[in-house]
Length: 149
Image (tube, rainbow, N blue to C red):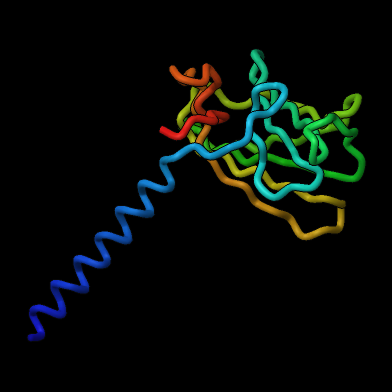
């Protein structure tokens, strides 16, 4: 009897782990106007875009995905690159926030985007893997993919 309970408990744990891994592999992001990744639960909606020169631009949009100007928001990025960790700071340029430095070389490493609505607000950390390969289906960079594969 105890052996059966242990087997059932182990099977349930494996099923939960399999479901979690499968759900994490899916891309369920909204499309953004400039092809970047929409950062979850930011207000206004923030779009993370890696530019061709490896700088990062953060654009903001309202509910209808119409551009709005950056106001009191602040952003920083922690890149956990193979060559070591790098902290990327941002400054306001026009209606967006633009990184002062470039992302480290390579890809496939983890990013932590620290978003604050105001300078004294509690930070919101958004984590994802920087994958610059192009998705075969939606033709966006994998970090910003909107397909469900």
